[in-house]
Image (cartoon, rainbow, N blue to C red; front, side):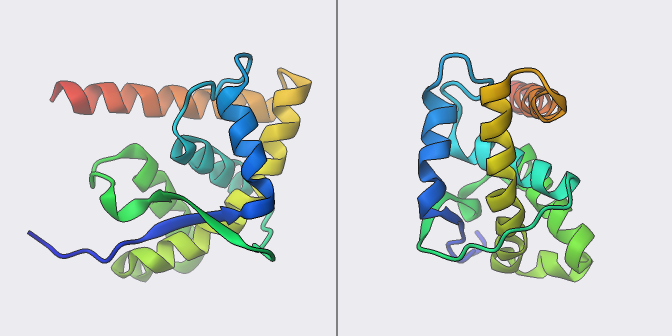
Length: 144
C-alpha cells in the first residue's frame, strides 16, 4: 500500500455558506450532494470562465483528496484542471494539484450561487451536465 500524504481541498471560509445553501436548497441541482461535488463543479466553472480568485481569508477544508479512489471522476476533473494550468508534472504532488485548483473553485462558487438564484442559465446547464457525468461515472464504478 502506498503512503499518500493527507491532502485537503480548501475553500474561503467566508463562502462556506454558499456550499451549505447549494447542498440544502431543495431546488438546487446540488441538493444533498457532497461538498466535494459542489467544489469540483465550482472549480470547473471558474476554470471554464477563466475566473481565478485566490483565497484571501481563512481557509476551511471541504474534502480530503488523498482519500478519493484513484478512479473517482471528481479527482480526475481536479487533476485535469491542474494539468492544463501547470503541466503534467503537477501530478507528482497532490497538494500542488489542490493548491492550483482552489482559486478557480473560489471564483466559481460565486457563479454557482448566482446561477442557483437565477435558475436556468449557461452556468446552471454546465453544472447540471457535470453532475450527470459524475453520477453516471460513480454508478459505473460501483457496479464494477
